[in-house]
Image 1 (cartoon, rainbow over the protein chains, first blue to last red):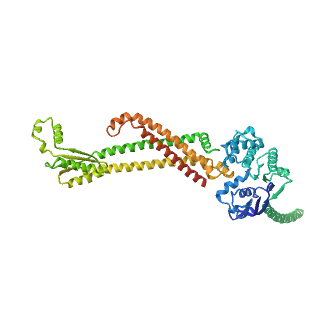
Image 2 (cartoon, one colour):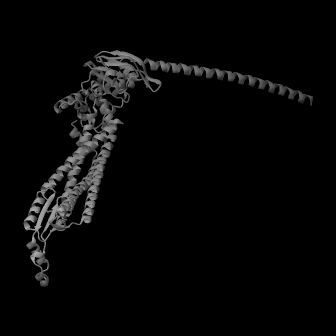
Image 3 (cartoon, one colour):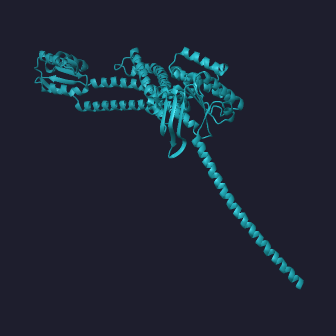
Amino acid sequence: MIIFSGVSKFFGTQKTAINHFSLEIKDGDLLVITGPSGAGKTTLMKLLIKEYEPSEGEIELDGEKFSELKKSKIPELRRKIGVVFQDYKLIKDMNVWENIALPIYIQGKRDQEVEERVTDLLNLVGLTDKALLFPRQLSGGEAQRVSIARALACGPKIIFADEPTGNLDAEASLSITRLLKKINQLGTTLLFATHDNLVLQELAKEKIVKLEKKVEELEKNNRDKEEETKKIDEIDEEKTKENKEEEKKKQKKKKTKNKKNKKEEKKK
Amino acid sequence: MKSFNSALTAIRRSPYQSILSIIVLTITFFVAFAFSAMTIGSQRILQYFETQPRVIAFFRLETDNTIVDNLAEDFRQKDYVKEVLVVDKSEALDIYRQENQDNPLLLELVTEDILPASIEISAHDAQDLDKISQTLRENQYVEDVDFQQDVMQSLIRWTNALRLFGLFFLVILTTVSFLMIMVTISMKVSAKRSSIKVMKFVGASNTFISRPYVIEGIILALIASLLAFAFYYAMILYVTPWLSDFLQDIINFPISWQFFAYQLLAGLITASLLGTFASITAVKRMLRK
């Protein structure tokens, strides 16, 4: 179980990413985290893998408080959480097989175990025939599948997919979403961060968490902008009224001049 | 990925960088091998020249041979004495005759009685010669002691300066080798910074990340050390005829295989240590950034 209690993350003095975020995620849950770009979805992921320290609040994973976790234990924590990145983050010098095998080698498993696990994962993501290709030889969808396989390699309890469909077309996005859903059905807790409408439609039945603070900020910003535009409109209206009056005056003057000229001509 | 395989793959996948590092390290190790041979050789040459000077003491004419022999025996017991040579009156006459065999008049005039017995003492360390000459001067049967102290002092100063210079040069070379491996590994780590970041994301510890680089540093240093030894050995074989003429009586040629075996072993150990420490320093520095 993951518990976020009153977690905030400030960068400098500005409240930018997350403010008083509280959430409980049970084992096996599928949670969709949504919000506009810059709402703090990636910050949430980085807080969960202890890449960032929360400025306020506490994060717990299976009863273990992150604030009490020693620096040397961070790699161990990260092995419990598989992360799928928007830009795949595959190691360019390693082929597909090596990329997937990396977390298993990190765990210190034997060669035979590694081989069996990687073969299973390649079957799961449907890339058995591409095992010896390098990341640059893969399409976006295939690269993301490798990234998912790598995230699963350690047999993590949790998968955090951070905008996994951000760089993919509609078809690939749906395929990746369904693959992740399938992984969740097999018992892995899934945190799916996205603002892709197609994916949100596909996951409409699941629990959805909106990063409200940022939305409020946006609304506030929108309100401010509306007020500003109203003010500008009012000023513009006033200006146009003034201009009209001036024009009327000018026209009156012209008319009187014309009348005078006509009278003089008649006299002549 | 097994660290050793990973290191070999890294070398294979960036061949030009690895070849460049190996070339530079080979030059460094070649100089180190040649220099170590030169240092050991020059040490032998210096020792030879240092032990050449002797203290020669001439006894009074009336001194009995047993007194001379006893004194010689006393000196033989001392640790710092390398060799004691006794020249008694009859031997002195033989030497005199040999040296003046072309002049019969001189040979007729000189007899055994007017030639003094003498004792020639050499030391393991030239600095002990002064002590030996002092002891001899204090002996009542000794009439004169021949010992060129100024020449000796000057020789000692030169040999000490040469040794100091050699040590300084060796320290400089070791530092250069260390920095060379460190820069190479730093470049490799720097080029793979994004991969290292990904590794950290998937749960790799600093030890796991640094192990292949450390092994790579050791492999590069070992290859360079072996290559350098091969070139150095070929060079020694090539110059052996000339050296054996030049250094006859001082160093025995051909040089024994044990000497080369020790040198190779020392080279490989030094390469491993240098590779390990330099790459650990480089990786630690880069991981901290």
